[in-house]
Image (cartoon, rainbow, N blue to C red):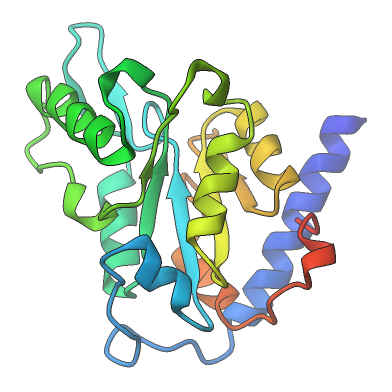
Amino acid sequence: MKKTSGRRTSWLLLLALGGLAALSVPTASAATRIPRTSEDAGRARGCVMVYFDLGETLVHTAEDESVRYMPGAAEHLRALRARHIPVGLITNVPPSWGATDAARAAKLKEVIDKDWADTRPFAWSDFGDRIFTPRTEAERKPAPALWERAKKAAGRCRVVYQAETPDEVQVGRSVGYLAYQAARPHWPAYLPVRLIAALAHLPYPNAGSAREH
């Protein structure tokens, strides 16, 4: 019963957003440029930011330990890029990888690139400084700390989170994200980009309704 209710809620949300997406949504030529930093994006008005988990959401590690894009991931990132929608990562790595998010992100890039086997390079430049990783073991997902830090960096932008893990999707929703479970059979691999773009045109929720999603 609980699963049925959750699916009904998800479909109602998608239908509602689909109606909004049918309205006029600015094209890439009419949109502002992608903010290069979280600070720039956080100052934007009428904006939406999309955060992802990494492993088995955007990239897949094969049995031979080679790493490639998940099906549809490169195309989804390209479509977000075309609409100038900023993206980020919320992902677990060992805190020992560095003292800052930037240092841990650099190590993450090194690890992924070492075993990268896709014909297309991973789109690291799309993520800018929006790669949030745990500073301590206590911050590791599913603790809400990373989502909270990423949401704060987004400022007044609406935030979307996409991951393949139901537990992570639920945590994202609990702290105010529109969270979508990616890579499910019989569902779109990722939240449709037109729906994501439409979110930027919804009124920003009051502080008291941050849990509405």
